[in-house]
Length: 504
RNA sequence: GGGAUCGUGGGGUAGCUUGGUAACCUUCGGGCCUUGGGUGCCCGUCCCCUCGGUUCAAAUCCGAGCGAUCCCA
Image 1 (cartoon, rainbow, N blue to C red):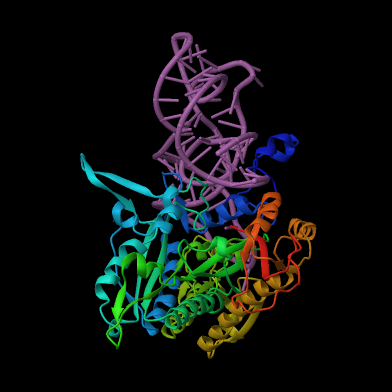
Image 2: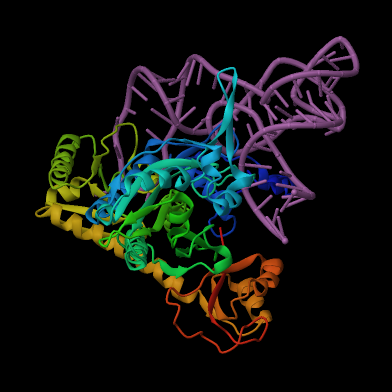
C-alpha cells in the first residue's frame, strides 16, 4: 500500500510516491491498525462518520452516526439504572468557586484542569464559576438538603451530561477530549453496607454493558490507594485491554465512605432519632467507552460494531441485471420490510449508479454487522446470502424465516467479536517476579503483568519511569492472597497482587 | 512537561529547493450509462491554517501563533 500520506514518503524512490492511479485507497482506510494505530484510529473515526475535529483544540464534533452509538450505550445503562432504583436529574453546568472548595481533596485533584467563567456579558463576576469537571460539589449540598431521615435513604441520583477538564494533552477523539459526555451517579446510604453494595451494583452493570452490549471482556478491579478518586475510600475500575497492549479504564465506581457526607453535611436521623452521617458513592462511564469499542473491534476495512450498538444492524444490497432489476429490488425490499417488522434495524441500499462492490466497501467502513446480498440467484432459489462484517463469513440461507435467521446471525456476530477479544485478553495476562521481569515482559508484549506488591507507591515509580507502565488495578477482594509472597520490586512481603500495564 | 514530523478544494496528493496564471485522483451536484467486490463518459461547484515580515510580486523565503499525528517523561 503506497505510503502517500507519510512524511517519510518523500524519502522513498520516486515511483513509490507517485499518486494513486485509482481512487480505491482514499475512500477507505489507508492506515494500518497494526503499524500505526494512532493514525489508523483517527482515520476510522473520521471516515466512518463518527466525529470531526472542532475548531478549538481538544474538542470534537460528534456526528449522527457517532452519537447514535452513544445513545445506545446510554439507553442500555439507563434502563438498568432505573431498574435498580436510580432517578435521573440535572444540575447546572457551572459551579460557584465557593462550592468547589468545600471538599478539599476534590479541589486539589481537579485544580489544574478547571475551566473558569469570569465574565457575564461585559461585567466581571463577583465570584467566578467553574465549568464542572465533575458535579459532586454541587450535587452533594442538595442531597444534604433533601436528606432528613433514614426514610429518605437510599437516595440515588444520576445525570447524563458533559464535563470539561482542561488538560493540555493532545486530542484522541472519544479517548481524550477536553469536553466529554458521561453519566455521573451519586448516591447516599444509611450505612457502609448499603453504600458498598451500591458501588458493586454499578460496577457489575458496567461489566455487563461491556460483555452484553459492547462485546468486550472486562476486568474488574480496584485502583491502588494512590490512584483513587480524591476523597474516596475505595475506587473500583473496569479495565479493558486494547489490541496494542494498553489498558483503558473503561468505567469506575467509588465508595466514598463518610468523607463527602461530612464535608457537605449529608446527615439523617435514624430510627432512634440519632443524627448520623450518610455513606455516599459515585460512579461514572464516559464516551471513552466508545473509543475503547472502536479500538477493540475495528480493522483495516474500517469500523466494526457489535449488533447491539450498530445504528444499522443489517444492510440489504440488491444485485441486478438490466432485465431483472424489478424482481430483484422487489424481493430485496420485501425482505427488508420483513426484517424491519421483526424489529431489526435494516437499511435497503437500492441506490442506483453504485455497484455492489462499492456498497460492500462503504458499509464495511461504516461497521454494519451483517450484509444481505440479493441477486437473481437468490430470487430464483428463494434464498438470501448473509455476510458477517467481522470476518467475511458467507452463508446462503432460506428466505423463509429470514427474521429469525438474521437474528441468530447477529447473535453469532456478537459472539465472534467477544470471543476474539477474550482470546486476546487471555494471552495478554502474564506474571513476573522481579523488576527486570516486569519491564521486560511489558516492554516486549504489552498487556498486563501480575506480580506481588507491598502496597507502597514508591515501588510503582521505577516501572513508571522506565516504561510508563503503572498499576492499573489490584484485585477487588482485599482478602485475596497475593500471587507471590514477595513484592516484585522491593522484595518485602507482598500485601496484594498488582496488575501493571501501560494505559490510555 | 520535553522532542520530532506535518498543515494546499470535503478526503488524498503535486507544486516549495530556484518567489510570477495553483495542477491531479477521488468525493460532492447535474446529465448519460446500469451492477455478483470501490464501472465508464460529459459538465459543474469548491482550495494554498492564521497573523506578521522580506519583496514590484509569497502556497513557495523568514518569524510567531493555532491545529494535527507520533515518540519520550
